[in-house]
Structure formats: C-alpha cells, structure tokens
Image (cartoon, rainbow over all chains, first blue to last red; front, side):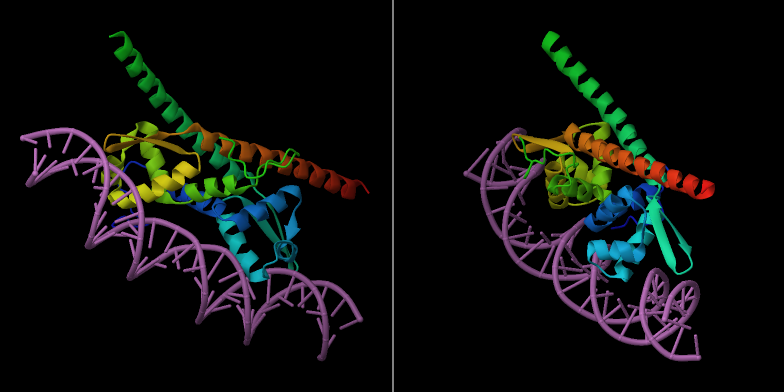
Length: 121
Length: 121
DNA sequence: GAAACAGTGAAGCATCCACTTGACAATTTA
DNA sequence: TAAATTGTCAAGTGGATGCTTCACTGTTTC
C-alpha cells in the first residue's frame, strides 16, 4: 500500500524495476504464446494476431510490454512491423534464478549444519 | 507427485498448466519479495506479514499460489506454519528457458543462413 | 478456564489488465 | 487517385487479482 512504484529506499538493487517488467511480461499466457511462436520464426504483427486469434491492437499492446522487458525486438519497414526474440530478457531471467539459487542453497547448508549440530550435540 | 495433467512424451516442453502457474506466481512483486525473504532464511506466516507490511490473510493467499507453483514448501507444527523455498519451481523455470533458448538460437541460424544466401545470390 | 497468539475462511472492494471497437495514419497495389 | 493492406491511437468494458475486514478455529501460556 504505502510502497509506491518509484521510491525504493531499501537495499534492492536498481534493476528491480527491470525484473518487475520481465516477470510481468512472462506472467501472461498470451505473451508466452507469442514468445513460443517467435522462437520458431520471426513474424509480423498480423501474422501473430492471426495465429493467436486476437486483434492487431491486442498484439501491439503485448509487443510493447515484451519489448520493454527485453524479450522481443521489433522493427518497422514500410507498413510491416517484424518481430523477433531478444536475448536480453532471457539472460536477465537466468541471472535472477542463479542469484536466488545461490542464496537459498546457502540457507540450506546452514539448516543442515544446525540439524547435524543438534544430532551430535 | 506426478502432477502432470497430461504427460506429453514428445519433444514438446511442458506448456501445461504448471508453467502457467509458475509464471503467474512469479508475476507478482509481493510474491517475489516473499521469495527474496525466504531465500535468506525460512520464516513463519506472521514474520512474512510483518516484513511485507500486509495482513496474515494476504500472506496465506500468496503462499497457496507459491506452493502450487512449486516455489515454496510450507509445514505447520503446532500453531505455526513455517515456509521455505522449494527447488521444483526454480528447476522448471530453468528448463523453460533452456528449451526456448535452443529454439530461437536455431531460428537465428536459419536467419543468418538466409541473409548469406541473399547476399551471395 | 481465560487470555493471548498464529493462522484460516468468506465476502467485499478497488484497482489492474487483457481485449475489443471504432476512427485514423501510412504504405503498397490497381 | 482510389482501394486495399498494415498498423496505431483513444476510450471503454468485463473479469481477474491483491488486499482488507470480520468472524472463527486451533494452540500455547497464564
């Protein structure tokens, strides 16, 4: 509630907003379907709209979110906008997982150490 | 255990409801904050509620989503429910990335092959 | 037993979000 | 130029979602 969007006085690294955008983008099944499609081959807006059974407008809105998350790159030539996958978002996602994994693996170690202590002490 | 609604022995990655639940769970900043906290150390419901500045009820609702996504494991002893990170969800997330990465890296190869053809043809 | 503690369930509320429609802009084609 | 194609902008709508309050159960402590 009191926590608003821009002020983040606590220790979270500044990439927090980027992670936010990333996960929000991936949280929607339609956008993931778009990524599925683009993983196989680049496509135009109308091609995506046809494949997904939604309007051009909806695709455009999703594309903006995917682009801001670094998951998709689009480029307009003439009247056609072509879309393809971008590495950045995926790399960031993997980094996030690695960071967290290292954290809780350490915490598991501590837990086991404690249990061993109790058993042996 | 095998919570696969429909196992798909073919090459397709599990685009099932599990992936859906996983990304939906990760799409909310509060739930990710809970994971941040639990990555450092296990905690009770009220401890999480205090740290996040939300009610016990809200924490309970988030916990259910995180648990169904395989990201958190909870266990109640006496009147206290203790929560900690679960590997399953994270493993599944990494798998998803790997699957997609392999797909679009192939598509990049095809793209470059096409470009080379056009330049040489 | 009474009181404090820890959590759960149901219902409501305010906001967010995916999607649509309709009007418009820009580019290609006839 | 007119018409078709491709996409964009603005505004609105229905449903999902996060969070709350209130009432309640079960557990520990006095």
